[in-house]
Image 1 (spheres, rainbow, N blue to C red):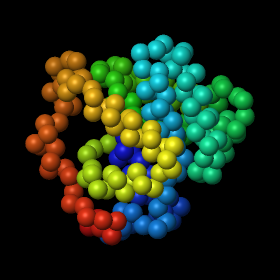
Image 2 (cartoon, helix red, strand yellow):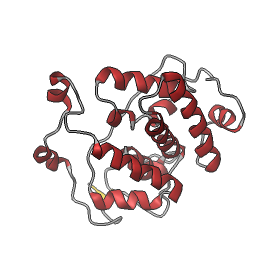
Image 3 (cartoon, rainbow, N blue to C red):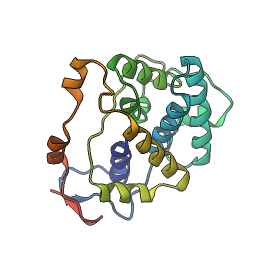
Image 4 (cartoon, rainbow, N blue to C red):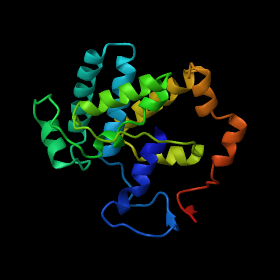
Length: 209
């Protein structure tokens, strides 16, 4: 999930000023968190608070936290329809088919033990606003600790607290969190093999390329 936040921060200077090159700074003066990070952490907070509860209870928690943190950071760059939903007392979804549901879903992949539960919860977090049949995605892979710290340093304390608590929650899960043998074989990454995916990183001046 921290990787999703990193991607948001690294990409923020280029969101409306796209580039087509591989040499660019990961963290720079213009880097900032956006609405994607705020909602990612609002969803993570909700899933931790609602773990083990019914779908109806989790949906209520999602709505409450998404509105709470969205209003706490109103200038993060929300889309027009979502902003209207956020700032009013409306709680029903508005049939959006945008990509906002995919941008906030990454915590789901780390909290639930089976593929069936993960897909179900991904759809649940999307349906709060994006109830149009559309794509839901989640992605993250390992990142160097120093880069993770630089990423977290950019976040306000309220959002950083959620990210740190989520990391602790995820690390506390047993290694056999995927309960079926098939899923374990397919998705569990051996720690030794995991090392080859970590890129060298020294500071915010490091560039990709």
